Image (cartoon, rainbow, N blue to C red; front, side, top):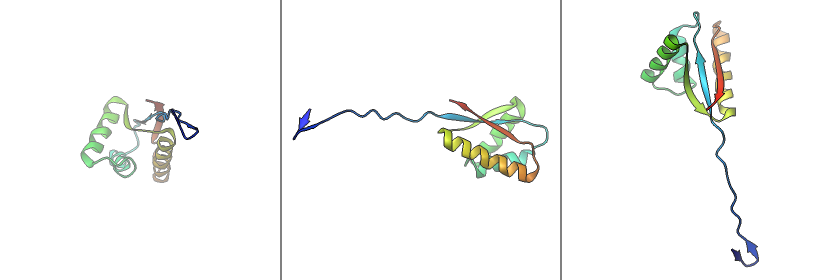
Length: 97
């Protein structure tokens, strides 16, 4: 379609890929710490945070959020930095959703 010498083109805008943030269980990081990370960094309400923490504890891992790659990595880094400061061997990873 041409309007005053211009051509209309369809520009396909793709949604960015999404990535799951995976929290992994260990035998040393406290449950309270995990719940607080889920509330503070992943913005979960206390009941959801506790349920996710129990999933991690029982199943060994759980998806705690789905974000674009940069946001997922930033949240993981923030959580890992907090864990290191507290002396916990807390681990998280990211996987394509």
